Amino acid sequence: MGGLLGSISMGLSKTQVDELACTYAALLLFDDNIPVSEDKIAAVTEAAGLKVETYYPGLFARYLAGKNIADLLGNVGSGAAAPAAAAPAAAAAEPAAKGADKKKEEKKAEPEEEEDADMGFGLFD
Image: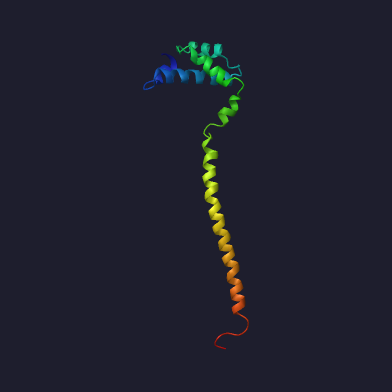
């Protein structure tokens, strides 16, 4: 392993280094507005002095084919967990909303009772 990945690969398996190399190669190609293809990913990794397993460039190229890489980069961190997390939040908000409705009803009920009690005469008048 050579180049930058070779120097930072301490603690990473060969598989992880190969995946990182193909990821960086695809990003480099995208950044230079060059279509991402199996041959180009392989050429970039070879130029970097890395020998990745022969199936990785094709795997990455097929995965990225027809995908908008800019959208993939823009969605980093959003993942599918956000909609799943929104469901419990909505469920938690529903009882709170019902509780707020009950409080409003209670507040409406109290003034009516006060109005009935204050009719100009009292118990001790």
